[in-house]
Length: 201
Image (cartoon, rainbow, N blue to C red):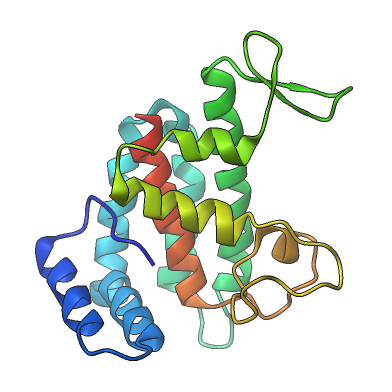
């Protein structure tokens, strides 16, 4: 998890309190984040999403984000909304990253199967994104979740570095993970989008 710049200090204080308890507080922190965004019919999540409409890269995607929120809010008990919402959000994260790179003068060389900068030099997507947050510890933590967890390298049939994680773009979108549909993973995807808003502004 990471703290979004848009989150209130009272929430940050609660995460610090949990951290001071010692031991593995993974599920306690999970619960805190999920409850924060779910309470009052996802009011905090709605407020988070509505902040994005001023960002040109996000503006044209707002209908998708609002539809995802609507699914979460209006789902029937027998349906797991994260099974539908999470892959949609991951696809948008992918598209936003690509659009941001192109806006910054990078282009994808189909022949070389890689990204190049304005001078034609091959660049590594992961390294390029890491360099975008070098001066901000807060954004750096978000970038780490995005690049080293969601977009970590994976191959069919092989486990991920963090075996407890079901938050993997490759494993979800290629149909290998079937139990990814958890609300905490969905909230993580929304937080990564919030990080990308900050990064692309």
